[in-house]
Length: 420
Length: 106
Image 1 (cartoon, rainbow over the protein chains, first blue to last red):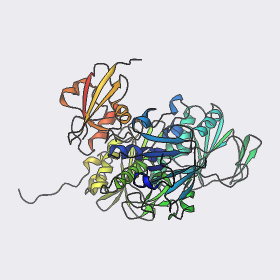
Image 2 (cartoon, rainbow over the protein chains, first blue to last red):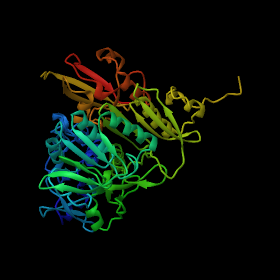
Image 3 (cartoon, each protein chain N blue to C red):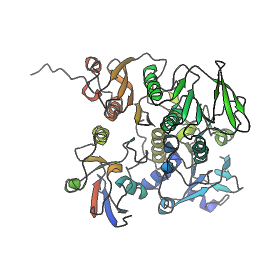
Image 4 (tube, rainbow over the protein chains, first blue to last red):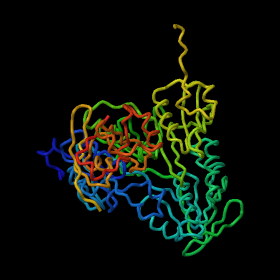
């Protein structure tokens, strides 16, 4: 390990990665793939070897919900020094080193911050009761598994993707599930009203009760949560509560170090922060989007894209074009995939396709002859075509778009040739 | 559990090769990730959500695998560099008779 104050090792300082979630894990792998031969040190606050996050909400009830991100011998095989169960408590940019919770310091040549985000817990009475849970880590799953048994009443606060995935899995297990969502529709932050209505229909078909435009005003019980009082004055009995109302970026060390942070660590398309030797990737970042705006994207595809971009920049390679944002969600047999982002302020034409499996639905959002976003359920073919068409700016035929039975891939504008 | 060693070679378009050892039951994606083969990410963990493990099966090895299910074929069709021998490596389960398998990276 390169220690502080060793001028002889100045040019040999390691690349240091903070956080071994999807983003941090991927950047270490990509640096080695790209030919980086120097020292790589990764620091993870968790004591557990890196694991897949998606199964935590999608199949928390199954024994295979723990899936390692990489095989056990990955770190030794790739010569990556992984330090677990240590937090980074200070970032000293002048001397280019990070200080750990055990008091040691590690110098860096380049630093990659991949510290992710943590779940928000609302400031409402009773949220400290036993059986009230957010879902981010493996430890959180253990509590959820214990509480979500057949016949139990599970209240889910927040109709976002994590809540919906847990709701679908729990309902299929015979758990009595109620979702309470503050906004007028599910997935208010990301989905169109038409798509959200379809998701709500699917959830209800699974037996989930959905109550939009409703909030929880108080959780009651002690020490175990027993009931929830809602904004409409009613009270529901509960055995467990899952809170999924959003996340905040773990950007505190960057903020304290004076790195530009506004709703996440501000990065460019290469993942570079306001300090050219410090990169940030994944959920902790506020990142540029293909349309010139910026956002905090909480998704694995975005984390992997940024890991690629940061690895390329560190290796001195040219930046790749920004990818079309996309994400997936599995809710029982419903495989949801969305390509492109919706801006609620922008008026778009909506076209519906039902050309995939019997329970498939594709909602297309179109500006003129250009596809902006495709929200799909059980239609991998429409989703993959959409990603490609958005990326390539392919021209669509609005007459064919209007035919629900014609798949998106056959809805391209065919050029009329004048010459024979 | 079958622990017979299977050799899998990944070939890039640029002519680089990665020789790996696998055991029956693993998917080609798992093998590639274990050996950090460039171009195979497998970010969804093999649930056919992400299509980041695209490989092309050389002609002579095509009969060694069952043809793709509809979902996989749909995922592959619009990938860059896709051809009729394109597969998602997460769906290529290795069997003892895949003794010296070769897979191309598009």
